[in-house]
Length: 209
Image (cartoon, rainbow, N blue to C red):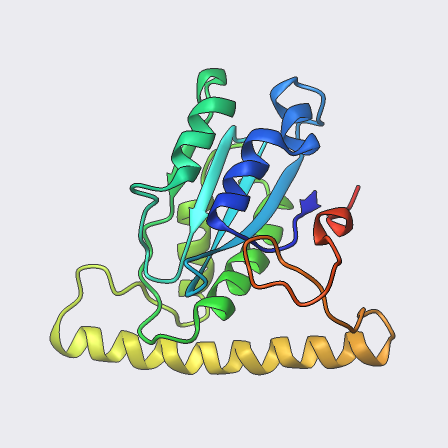
């Protein structure tokens, strides 16, 4: 599995077209179970994430409001790199977010669900959209899609409580990683964002075998 550092939307599209991992994927030189995790920011305002699976032959797109990638450069990049090989680009249409600040936590929740998915027997059935919905339902989380009135209010309240718990859990993970001296502290440049130091995080993309 390869974890990519966050990028802007154009940077994520460039990864799909040009990154060595994607070129190996297109050439069929990656293992059947290989996958990628690629977070990106749209207009530096809202976080999205892409999950790619060689076994499913799908690139999944997730963001907290359950939107799609309409008018995105990622669509064009996908068409150039994977569409002609029989892959699909699928947006997970699960509306979970109800505020303007928890998008980053929701994509981390989705990442945790992805790690569970690729280790499960469902991997290979192109079933991540249903997997994440059922996985989160087990935690009391419900998509807002189609809900109204009391049902919507109830779901929203449960989802907001869940994301507060998830935020605390992820903060705890960062603290534990820092205590274990596993965090690099300093300034760096995320492609597409305002530069803070001359460090290219592309070189630090984490390739986990």
